[in-house]
Amino acid sequence: MPASRHPALSATDPELASFVAAEEELQARTLRLIPSENYVSAAVLEASGTVLQNKYSEGYPGRRYYEGQQNIDRVEALAVERAKGLFGVDHANVQPYSGSPANLAVYLAFAQPGDTVMGMALPMGGHLTHGWGVSATGSWFRGVQYGVRQDTGLIDYDAVRDQALAERPKIIFCGGTALPRTIDFAAFASIAREAGSVLVADVAHIAGLIAGGAHPSPAGHADVVSTTTHKTLRGPRGAMLMCREEHAKAIDKAVFPGLQGGPHNQTTAGIAVALHEAAQPSFTAYAHAVVANAKALAAALLERGFDLVSGGTDNHLILIDLTGKDVPGKVAAKALDRAGIVVNYNTVPFDPRKPFDPSGIRIGTPSLTSRGLSTAHMPAVAEWISRAVDAAATSDEPALAAVRAEVTDLMAAFPAPGLPLS
Ligand SMILES: Cc1ncc(COP(=O)(O)O)c(C=O)c1O
Picture 1 (spheres, helix red, strand yellow):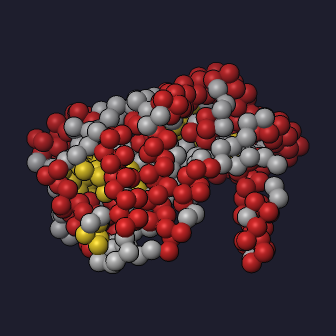
Picture 2: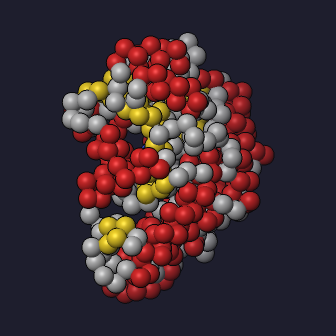
């Protein structure tokens, strides 16, 4: 990959430019299976790198604390309108810097320090910001956690209801970071109504699937929808909070001036472009292809003797429990990396091992689908994973190198969006 893709950067700071070029090479040559990652389009990349970067814009369109907002207001208003249209919501705030601050803004809007909040436990697939102990949300609030059933790997909605009625949390979070199954937003809404709680659907992982009609929508069920914009939605690193009109003021006030200062306007522009792309028929096809690929990959892994949490997947994500393979998740992830396959090690529900050395790996299909891989390729992907995990057990470096060569060959035939191979 020539560094001249960024001529000004290469001239000014060749050292930094070389790091970027190396990352471009890495992203182009490897099979990226981290389910929270993707490839943004060239248009999103361009929008995210514009002179909108140069503007301070505290406030909201038409209500700024700075002058010179003629164009910024139009950018943000466009992003907001596109978010509302795509997700079918009354109100959207596109300013949160990322998913964690977006969730923190929700606490600020609806709870006081010390209040009880409820979310899925981190080791069960929830996110840190859903009240988990090591997060500010778990130390400033009283976090109570639900999980999945040990026998099925699925959420037990009756148990969640019992817990919610006993705890009466101010906020209930549904959604998570390692959930391979469809979330029943209607069931969570009914539980939250009974418990008198604000329901927040954190759809960070599945926002693109929802936009493309490949996962049910939380609109009309959740009081607030929180999402990052950079996972299946295929936008820049950022976040959005969406809600019914009745909560609009509270959400906006919590984001600014409650938690943040000036919005990152270049990111807002990238989000607007991503939302436009996600409204196209081709994105609907993409979202369905992500799920079809994940299901095909899960089936091919099951055929090769892998143990999948919940037995498979309904979405973009697969959680593999490697206990039966006698290879810890971290060892497998590092071996896969050497084989050109990028995954993350992850706890599995009821994991006897520690989070930094867990039993599982987490994989997903958003990135490979963005490159055009189809269900026909999934048996080969599963076979590579299988060979690499076997090689990890015996530290068979030549076997990993052989997988890497095959991976590199296939990836060369499927250029990444926004990142054409030289
Ligand atoms: C469900 C969920 N919520 C929130 C976040 C936090 O997003 P960020 O990393 O942008 O702060 C993540 C990130 O992985 C997530 O998976």
